[in-house]
Length: 411
Ligand SMILES: [Fe+2]
Image (cartoon, rainbow, N blue to C red; front, top):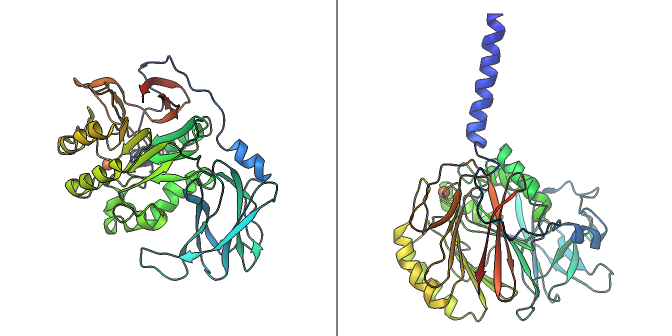
């Protein structure tokens, strides 16, 4: 009996330590903020799957595909598709409309940032001359034969499109634990068209294996249809100064080495910063980048938070440098992570909204309040934003699907 008791204890201790490593957060918020603007629910994937009449699965003959295809940079005119293969020869991407009325294709090129055997090739293919705000289907072909079913994606709207744009943002996500999976399940409940991430994408140390197990294995069904634009976090830097991060994502190169960059999605201009790199250099770049944009909505996101009442607290060096640019360029929304909680700041004197969203699945930590706090909660969550023409509505949704906070930000 004593033997049995000891072995049960050992099992429970092992389970507890596994939980410590992977998840230990509050999946449901125990606090409620502003719930006056509930999001309309629908899956972001359903129209993309239905248009191409397939789940986007792999076909016989796909044995060389080691990481399933995923969309990366999508613009209003082009789409970049990535995958990993053990045999890089003869691979192309073909894009068609769902009615097969038009098609385009482009060869794939190998682009490994990390030194590794040629048996693991990171491939990228960019298809151009697409139409804005249009659903297309793509397939990967090897020597002319498709190895995937058609997979649906939507190009970005044009800059003058007035339609509502849905965006998902979360951070500090990738440990592979139960919290991450709980939130993942909720990611099919609101209709966004792109995903941004506030850093610490792959715990514990941002290795290629951790990107595989804690990122691609978990989000594969999202990533094959919807583009993902992450900022790098300190954990992503723990391996080879974030070379695996650079390899597995193909991000814009208009800033620094795919780790700070900007892009447009319709009438929203986004800039991602790298809070592991020099701030002054990036602020000079951001100043020029924002000055060159005529987009009516501007968003900046990064890992370390300019404002936070969590355990890491505010990065005041960053705040001192960033706040004048936020004011100068009319940047309406600023997202950060690093503290594993949700915190919505009071609108600053210019009506700008700072939010810390670091509860993407890697546990939570207690968060307090400060003079700048409008609402804070220690909770696993994501933030879903709807950009209208004159206002953006922010929805904070926990790992059980409950919307526990919302806010409206004027343009
Ligand atoms: Fe972090």
